[in-house]
Length: 112
Length: 109
Image 1 (cartoon, chains in turn purple, blue):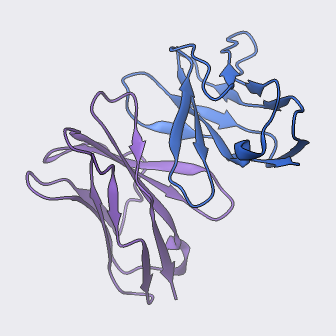
Image 2: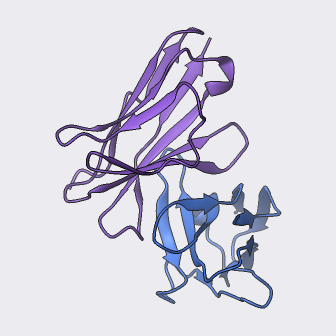
């Protein structure tokens, strides 16, 4: 089992561009979580998805951010019209039982 | 709303010394508590969870509901224990984790 995969590992975007972050969960895991880590802070929950459904998006900013987990393919976190404050590390985790979460290596987004 | 606090950003000890990484939480229900560890250049990984009551790599943590704490302890620190440690809480239903700000443990030779 390859573990949770995230790509790209590093992403640089100019202000106003779109950022797409991908997460492939571990085999057999149907629960996906996204977290954001701002510099010098802990991880903060953004969204929890199951296949084709958003279960909890209470941590997502109301504008510019969206997430999906289609029937086929990876989960995608999309940030439209990025701003400097979006610069952070974005982590994906997956779970088979909604209790133990396995984390990916993260995507470090830098907005210039 | 739940909250997790790790009061120390950095903890530095000598090899062989006891270690205690503090974690306090606030939550009105019955939480599930976890410790995650991130070694240099590696991904975040689960170290232990309170319901399993295991000892992993010599670390233990006891949930104290009276003091709302879940401190991580090890009697004799090793250099390979140097890492970032995060305390996390799951507020039932097995959904999102609420993380503390993390403590960097440095074990000096």
